[in-house]
Image 1 (cartoon, rainbow, N blue to C red):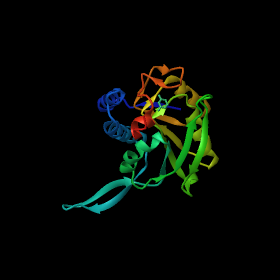
Image 2: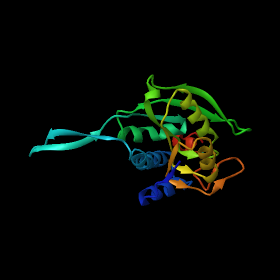
Image 3: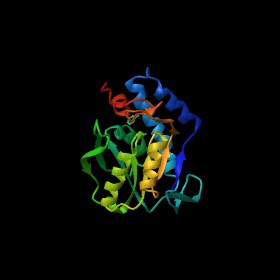
Image 4: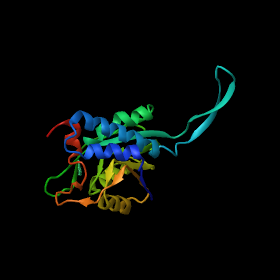
Length: 208
Ligand code: URA
């Protein structure tokens, strides 16, 4: 069980720009994407390599390429979609599953409304992507759904987490490593992360 906070200065800078309520939709979306790329870079650090031989313009060379394990990204709809361009830019061969969950306004509990995975999802390592790890209930439901598909290796990638969400996910699934750009202070009474960025989905898609 591990929590990885990617506290690179560029990540911190970009998250600060995202927090500003005056940051518009276009810039917010770009910042989500750029930040996701840095976090994905760390979340894929353990990808196995194999050695190949190739010819450079000057010589024969032994070189390393990614090998073996196949990867899938699973964005939690809808806010997770804002991170997908970035992560597939880094790992173009990855497949993508979609998981639609919304938070019931009163109970704050996740409700699944859509799930579509690649046929071979059980043979892939999966990185779930969602910008905010708030209560952790959606993350737990997402991991449960993927385990039901037979997935064995799961990571969770977000931009902002908070102690409650981390605790909930790590307690339910200690085998799931969490990768985040920053750990914020707490949840408010509406279960939003504070200081946070507000509603990430609304800010990515301009729906408010
Ligand atoms: N989802 C969001 O978009 N923002 C939060 O602060 C928590 C959950």
